[in-house]
Image (cartoon, rainbow, N blue to C red; front, side, top):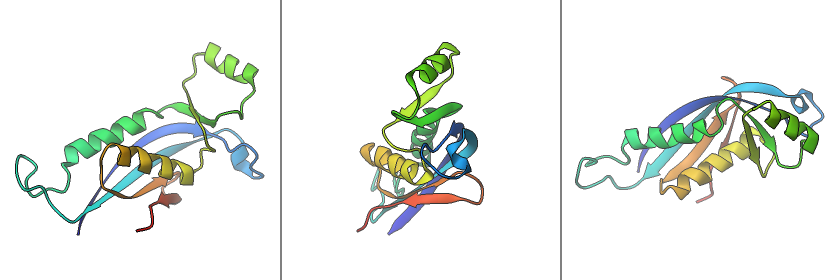
Length: 141
């Protein structure tokens, strides 16, 4: 088996609606996405010969995912009052609505599936909220 990993970062705010701790309040992170790919065969020909995946393409895909959330407020659909959303939009704040609670665990799963849908051989995605705290998602084999 061969494996490789690449990463991208973004800055964004979030809150965890219904959480009993401090994370129920709006706060920000320097998020870091680490994608690990795995495969048994390297490309046989072309410019990607003897590569599992070209790092340039992988980095581009990761950066594009990170850019979707960079400098935005990430929130779960239905957790902000319509008046709050209207006020944020009126102030031209950048928002990223998701159908799930924006925990590191769920973001790792989300990024995993997005990269997988792009045809990558994703083995695991790890999302860091801080340099010391991360969550990972992978699927059972």
